[in-house]
Image (tube, rainbow, N blue to C red; front, side, top):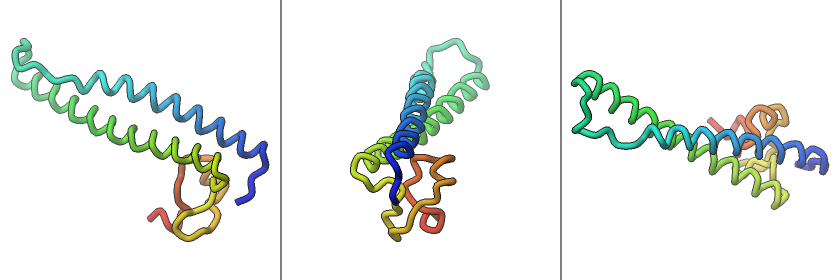
Length: 112
């Protein structure tokens, strides 16, 4: 896909903003993944809630880490000149898709 310098700068800015947001959310969620102490003075149900919250935070951290990897890979594709090109089929990734999900590695046809 042939992007102008202005378009690439636009997507780089979108990706940079998204990376910052993901890093902030990772920091918050990593704090929530700290082990729940068995010695804490929580009731049985409250302890179960705390363990469930911890598991939800762990799942969120995993999802955010994956998203961060995708963002960094997209920024790398900009540098390599392959941004917006689907690596599976070679077609262009729709610009509207990249506006919504700038880190999208695949076109809609190959994503599914």
